[in-house]
Length: 280
Ligand SMILES: [Zn+2]
Image (cartoon, rainbow, N blue to C red):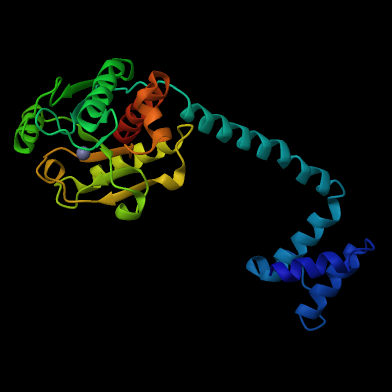
């Protein structure tokens, strides 16, 4: 049908629409004319005739098509602005208060990864503490599994979370294996197939992934979402995920945590991801 429309349009280039329409009708009805009100209402030929009329009348059709350009330009602008905002410290407040448990990985006798003066247990506590400090602005209530240098057991951390029964649970870590050993990027989102709220965990993971990907300085190809059967995720009743925020041996990546301004950007991205994941 579309091909015929195009052919018809070509055929009436010299403005003999009426003659062409008559010819169409004639050939369609074996040389006999029909009154236009006749039963060929739903026939394709009627549509071709209507199209003939329309194309004959549209000398400004090209200009009219141009009118769509400002619309496209506006859409592009809208989308580019929202992406840029995501990269900055935009605060998105949750409509309804969200309860979040943040687990600073390791602690006490368990230092986690270590490189030079950097120790994973200190970095994770620093990140978790900052997330808690920034959280009220997002209408998120944060509970920490530890707020100082101590070691709650993995079961203890899960207990704390399950007693609070939060909307979400996030465990914070820093990677320390070289790229070639992990075979993945240095900013990783982990979820566990064993978690009873797997779909919500995935939504949370992807939501935070998106926000972290928009933070300046973090390469998208250094970021991945993976499934890992971590104890604190598997045994948690709440949607749960773990974040491995950079590699402790990568100086540039660690500036994301040691530099206060960059840390705020990272924590903001995590909180925005939580708000977005809880939006219905
Ligand atoms: Zn760790």
